[in-house]
Length: 434
Image 1 (cartoon, helix red, strand yellow):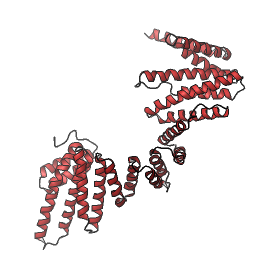
Image 2: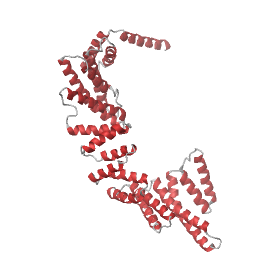
Image 3: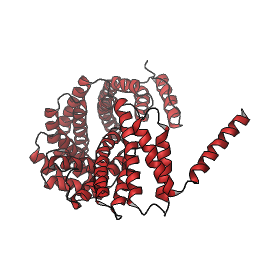
Image 4: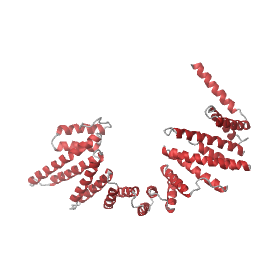
C-alpha cells in the first residue's frame, strides 16, 4: 500500500512538472483546445476543464503572454464555463453548495483586463459578449449566495455587475441592468448585502439614494434607520417617521420604532405604538408581551413615586401578559413575566411589613397574609417557566424564595441546590416539575 501511494504521488508530481514546463504560448493554445474539447462533450471530457484551468494559469502568469488581449479573452471564456458548470449543478440540486463561487468574478476580471489592452475589433466584440455572459452568471451566483447567507461573496458579485454596466456604457452598449426597475432592485439587494457585511457607509449611501428615488419598499426605511442608528446619526428616528408617513401599515417600520423606543425607555410613547402593532398583528404574542413589559415598568416607576396609577398599570400589565399566554402558553418570557409581576408585588408588600413599627402587629399580620397570597399566585407561573427552562437563574431564585417564604424549606433547599449547580457552570438535565 505504501509503495502504491508513493507511486501515485510520483505520478502527480510528474504531471505537475509537465504542466509547469509548458511554454506560455503553447499553454494558451492548449487551454483553448481543452475548453473546446470540454464543450463538445462535458460528460466524457470533464477532466479537460481542469486542464484548461491549469494551462490558462500558466498563460496569465507569464509576462510572455499576459500582455495580449487574446490570453485574457481565453481566460474569461474558461471562467465563464466554470461558472456555468457550478450554477447548473445548483439548479439541478438546489440543496447543493455552489462550487467555484468566484469563477464569474474571475471571468469579469479577465475580460476587463482584456479591454485594457490593445485589441482588434472582433476581440472587442468578444469581450463585450463575454462580459454580458459574466453579468448573467453573476446575477445567478448572487442569488444563490444570498440564499446561503454568504453576503460577502454576494456583495462582490453584485458590485462586479455594476462594473460591467459601467464598461458597457463606456463602450456605447446598454444591456446589464439597463431596465430602471431592475437597476433599483439590484441597488436594494447590494445595499442589503453591504449592511450585512458591515459596509455601513456604502449601505447608508445606497439606501439614502433609494429613498430619494422613491423606491417602493418600506424596508429601505427600516434598514436605513438601523444603519443610521448604528452610525450614531441623530436623524435616524426621523427616517422611521418619514417611512411610516409613506407606509402607515408597515409592520417592519412600526416594529423598528417600537424597538427604538424600548431602547430609549420612552414607555409613554411605546404604549400607543404597541397598540398599533397589536391591531396590525393580533396573533403575535410577542407584541402583547412587549406591552406587558411596558406597563410593568410603568407600574414599578409609579409605585416608587407613590403614584395612584401604579395599580392601574399593574392590571394593564397582567392583562397583556395573559393575552400573550392565551396565544402561546409555552413562551418562557411570558410565564416568567407573569410570575415576576406577582412576585415583585409580594416583595413590595414584604418591604412594607419590614417598615412597620412593633406596635402595628395587626397590620403586619394582614400584610403577611397578603404577601403569602401573592407568592402563591406567582408560583404556578414560575413552575411553568421552570418546565420551559430548567436552568434560568432568576426563575430558580424566585422558586427558592417562594418555597422558603411559604415555609416549604425542603423544596426551597432543592432549588438552592439546582441554583448553585447552574451558578457553578453546570446544568439541570430536566425540570423539577416533570
